[in-house]
Image 1 (tube, rainbow, N blue to C red):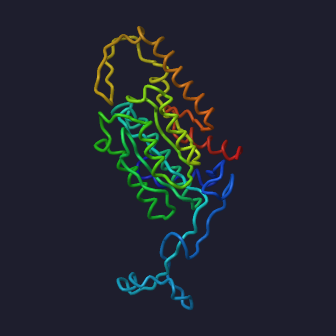
Image 2: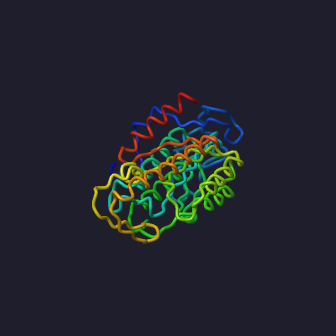
Image 3: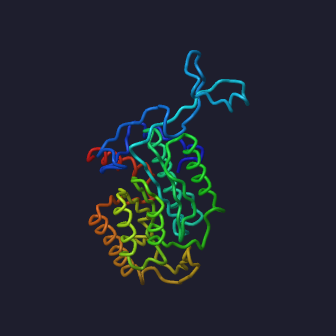
Length: 307
């Protein structure tokens, strides 16, 4: 996994685009135009004043502090608003005490998407969830706003800010988010879909339908350790399994439950896939045994060809 210092820079994505397949905020379908700098809407940054320019947009407060003339620059309204939703429940820190866990996989994927959206001069927002909304910032396109997103992603890499016994309530939390994300957006969700409260997958997709009803486009990255969590490739010996979210423990011989476990988990994941197809949701199987670039990069290329 990349060093934390590289979380803001993903040059391998400079020639890619993340585009919407449907109308977002009433503008266009498909590839959206990059916005241009003007003097309206949202503050972006300062630049030095050039002699002869209009003094209308000089930042006089900054002049009083620095005795230098700067012009305020603004960005036009963007066509695309990308909003990243990150599951930070305790099941996402599996494998436990391992840097290459599901949460870090999701963090780097989210950071790369944020980098790509910013390079396109599109807006990016971030929400982290477990059994409730833990952090939320609306989608904006200013460079300073992107630092807020990156800073929150950095915090999540500190084990003190994640930890054990953080449960999941995916359905209710997504419903709540649908009420506060008002503008049409491209919603990108990272989760393992291993929940404690949502025994019925219908409840989760009712929440996704809420997003779709509000005209959002939804992409899901199903983040999983395929080798262990899906294929159950543990050695044939006694294990004590500990639920990272509830703390419950169970002692078993893996061969005694491997067949029944793999059948049930396969049924659950297949149901997830079928539901996504029914609801018109992009589902990407994200196996953490691969580098996040091996999952995200091909998906973006494939998406660009389709849309």
